[in-house]
Length: 435
Image (tube, rainbow, N blue to C red; front, top):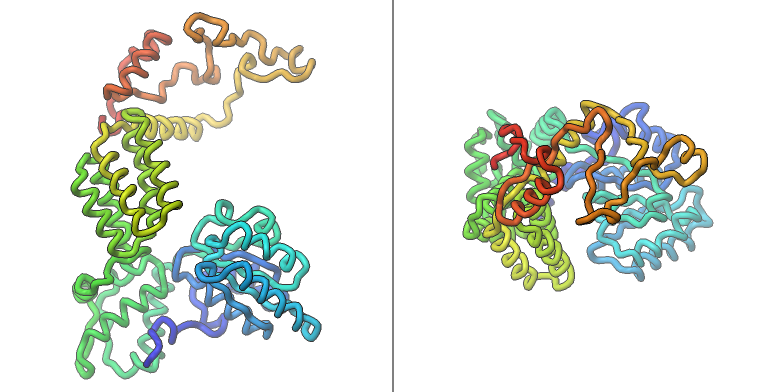
């Protein structure tokens, strides 16, 4: 059985490697280390299909050192220790440390990551980790501090076109076919900068045609082939983003039926349940917000529940949360407020903190007037007293504009009671964002 096209086209050398010129181009940081024959441990962070695994294999081949591979999905602490033990036994006969490549290292538990620390620190193995998630959240700090971090970018249009051209001209199977690239827009959109996905799409289109006829690849042909393919839902491609967009907009638009439908599409397509739960936490803050603060609590509890009970039962709390969010009243006042605040900061720069709001832990600071005049709210009736909290030049700016849902109306009326005219003034209607 023939290998998939993406595997047949996997580069063997840096000269064949497409993309990531900021890391492996002439004079780039990784290229210099590779050419010098010595590399330190590092983690490659990037979306799927941008060349993380391929780059690790090329480095190992170039340095002629043993190359061990572990998948964080299927490997445990015992597997890690076995590899380290093998590396130690063979380490007396070579100069360069063996390379241990761990795919999806963000899925390793803390104990699994802890088991790597000693071997990495002593140089028993050179660790190359690959992750699609932000390592600062998913990789323990001691291990992250022992590794360089390199960010791989999605392949650019020119990179993808070069890959298509090379595949058609050099692949042993595709060379046998008459392939004409009339249009490439749909292929590039669906690939989303992912080389593996791009080659999979090309292979799907080619294999659907009769062997002797000329294959004219057009956008229409690509779209029709992907729609006929039952695996067309792609967890990292354009359809992935289209469907999650439809899901969130259905929640925002208060349509629980549509929210459940788009969620079912994601579930059937093999979407990561954590991704769905994470997006609902965001929606609970962005779209529902102060109109129903309990939505954020439920969304966060849903995320925890999915993590604890796994699949397929996790679909139940996901569905419960989706319906609740869709049926909740909506307000984006907090979302709009932080947007206005960030814009204001960018326009006005680092405004000084008023002296009365500054701490005064030293005598010098007290002598300079730090904290002088600050009024402690709890010393006043209703635990409130009017004073200035914004910088002097911005004290009349309004950033939070209430949207008068029943729950948020209570907050607004309290602000009117506290601040009077400042909150009674009508806001710019252009700032209400769909109120």
